[in-house]
Image (cartoon, rainbow over all chains, first blue to last red; front, top):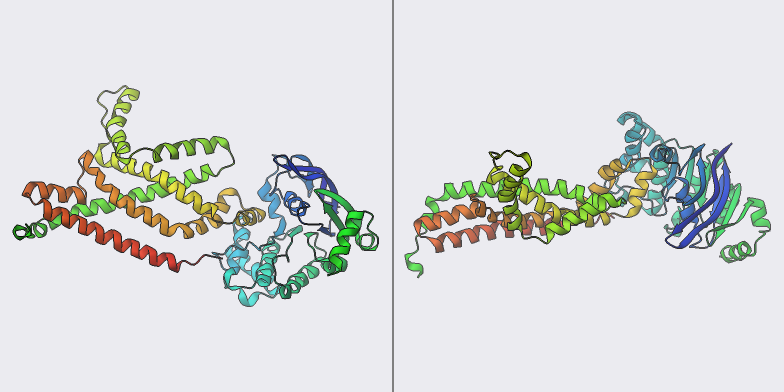
Length: 244
Length: 229
């Protein structure tokens, strides 16, 4: 079953075309890693999936609904798709628990008690239960990102989007976040991850999408991609990042 | 020249001056409250992606900000009754009285200034915050009320209060429509008893004490509100 389907998506910032005819599909339970040099449009692409960035051409279907259709309720659609940002974007004026409760209460209509129960079980799962009453500013980057993942999961999403979740982290904190993501992938969550963490891709990804200059240059299974990327640009990119 | 000053006049007129001060403070608080509410709406309109909301709001703000406050007070005191008579066709229609004219004039005038402060405050909240709120499925009003505005206002409290101090000083202009605020009360006593020097010095002292101590508190508050991130 296809969860996310992109059909010939194009997007412009003014005259500059950031996305050029991008097409791909993500099936239920699939983990897809999107990589590519900076400025290649990866983040823009993933933000189109839940309508944070509007598209100008093409069709984007998530869970059977067209994202750009004015009839579609974007808030309702977004509530079903978790998103994790590069800079965590926890709400700094709320405690960790309140961060997790907010949308459960106002979007899903859960009661305070139901929401708190859900939040606590997720904080337990990402190893942050001891910090439930702290504020985001009191946590390290890795801890904030784990809370952000829990906040996305609290909505019982059908898919999770990750926009460079480890890029703003100090090296020693990257693994604590990746561990949570690996666990999530192994449980069968549908995931679309923009990341440079090729170890993560090797470990759990089913497919790898390589983007360059707004185009999807390569869309291959993990083994094909790491074995013999077909395009020169992908080979070049891999040779650059895998040497480090 | 200071030998024949009569400081007793101050003590004798304290109840009257006190009433004037209550009026000044009341008008300041009401106009501040109204100005902040209206200013927030205007700021959201100015930041909207819809031209139809953006243009009227920026027109309003630019018009009011290039108009002297005293002229706005006159508009509401003198012109609005005329307009009401003209449009309602009722030649007996009454104005809304000096207090309400002044309150509306101050609220509308301050809203233009608060709009610009609040707009800057909203823009000081990183765009990722509203994106995160939207990504969770919050609607625009929910994202604003729960996520963006609380952070924006937290950043803005000092400058909003500073604008309030300016407003407090500006309320002395209500004497032009015959209202008696603190300044007006002091002025009336000064004229009546021929004690201009005493009363105007006393009024200046009171304004100085109130405004200076409030700005000092604002400064203290500002250093205590650490940036949220």
